[in-house]
Image (cartoon, helix red, strand yellow):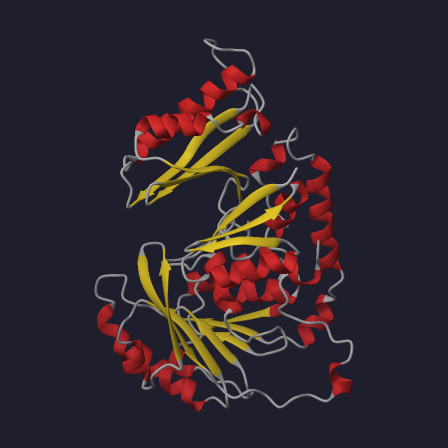
Length: 408
């Protein structure tokens, strides 16, 4: 069966998700704010869930329509052929509803009416009108989004958000999500044989995501998805095939060889953060590729050239911290200036970041992290000289996303 699939993502980073989906070999049908849609079959559901680094989750679009009254919402939802997706005993509920610039704005009422309409349709389709449905089968969470009176209803195939890779068991204050970290890395020219340093590494998310890219480890390879229980809709063997595909790719990478040509370093002044980062890297299977060290940003140095700083510095989220920010950003700017032909990329909500770094960014992209407006500043250094063809021949393309070597 062919589906219209929807991959919600961070606002402003749709291009990253679009590129990943194209690299998986699927046809993009629409790109809107915070959402990329594409066509795919049951196998695509499995491969996209396991392989997409930047999407928040994956939905099967069940229906899309306009509704400005509760009756219109009920009738249009009931008109969807839910029996094509759900068995009569499916445990279906509306896990989330949002409404923006629409006449129907009560999310609680939206959830209630959509669920009643779906159950009414199933009762009719399965000849159980007026009877209770058992609802003891597989879980089918629905997500409803209404924007300017346009309703989108999707079946959530992921369950837990895709940023939950399974490795971040230890965390610290103000962590950056795995999906956002992966997308920001993809916005840079970094790849696996280039130096990467995060001087405010926290629980290690930037470095772990980068190491997973370099090692070709699919982000969803070690986690489960709610749609694995939808065996009548998506055969179990398709999930097994997708997991096997991901494991085969990871096993083809020689970690000991990769370690010789990767240089990933994380610094922090917080011992608890470094402990969390080391444990998380172990759980992600990339601890051999990353060096974590207690070091203040004022001590940042590296003998190499053409490296990258990708980081999420403090931005004053705690009371009393804002007074420290000018000094922190000033030290970051000074240490960056002392490096040889490096590039620096940082995401922060601190509006005076450029002022205290001492230099205006070459590029500045506005990104919303949850409801918080942040800025992704790009300081672009020189490109390294081209290597001789003999040196490049047969070389593995580090940093390549899970999807980039797979088509169809």
